[in-house]
Image (cartoon, rainbow, N blue to C red):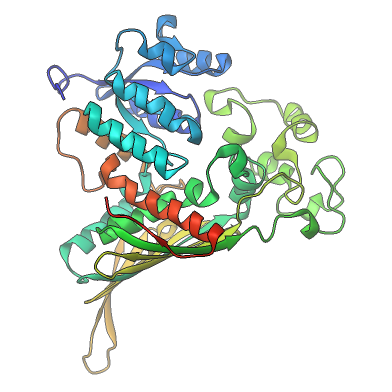
Length: 430
């Protein structure tokens, strides 16, 4: 990489796919304009493209409908922030690498292992930087745990147990009513769309290649035959139980104001409909107004994964949808001690055996800063590391370089094959 002129100037970037996640990462340019500057946008939707251009003061000549339009002209930036839909990640990222752009790529990396390896090979071929938005590695909670593991304080890892409890309202908006509710449409399983973060955390902590994976899960709850008596097809049109239903579109998206960036088009770009418009939208054609038992969802609502690593360590991950409280838990057991905690609590405990009289174990509680978001404050710390790497600085302990990020995905792809085929899958060494 030619670093001439980069170290003392902002890194320049093009937004590719002006969705909510891309705009969140790009907000680093607003907070740290001396480090990152947004100079262009690629977005097929003309309204979204215009609103993004207005937000970052972009010239019309730097606004494109497609990646093909961008790359056929001269290079206009150091990097691209690629937040396109899951099944577009590879077909948009490889031309960017070929054209000389480094890439910050939203997860999941790809919708199949074969496509992921195409990107892996392209990265090697073109010699560009590719970092994956595995933002949990940057959350202070997980970073602090990784530091304890690396210190050797708990010895060698024997087993890791993680769980992600996906709240009832998050489950409904993303995986029942929303864009990831059907693998046929999104091309991603729920495990990969939601839990590739968690599988990545496991592989990061273990630090070895996975060998085998098995998985079990199904769509158990949100099916038409399970609809309560009195449930209609739409919350605000024909439902007799809407007033007391926790999945009420009115309660979730209007009264509580949750998930507006999904439910109301371009709300994250400043276009928020009036209350009357919101109600009419949910009553008529908005998919987020559908009854959760009468959607076209086909992804699982719970899944368990079992992993074996080189060297003998094992791990489990449980994803459970429609829980009361959203949370991620982790419990790492080593040869000399253990670590356990809950991300949303902002604390974890380090325990060691303590055979002194009157004792069984000793423990130390460690508190970290946890921001009020689903990724524990990792989002913009990821962008900061990406900028640092492009300036030629050493990557952080949390580095999500592509070559360090493929292992959790390989577990995820293998787990889904295991679930569907009913057998343990071998994972080939890279």
